[in-house]
View 1 (cartoon, one colour):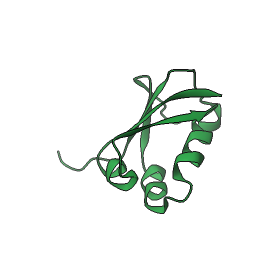
View 2: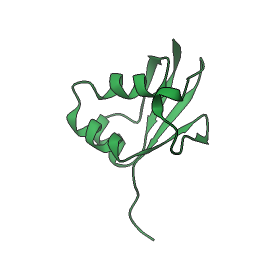
View 3: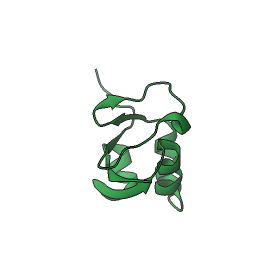
View 4: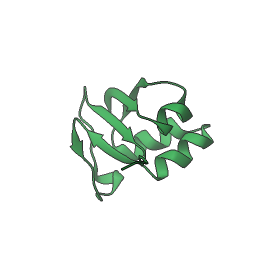
Length: 83
């Protein structure tokens, strides 16, 4: 079980109500389950988001396969509009 910080950007920040929060989880999948429990709007945003784990893109990897290390920072990046 890793302990770390999750940071929310844009719509994810609005949906979570905070810019960041501490967490305990072993994988990215477990983390997403934990942080979205009881937060329907955040769950909706997270389904469309991409993620960085210590600055590295998760890409298309299965979230169950993304093992989190102690002290990790996970960033939730919803789709951004503009151009």
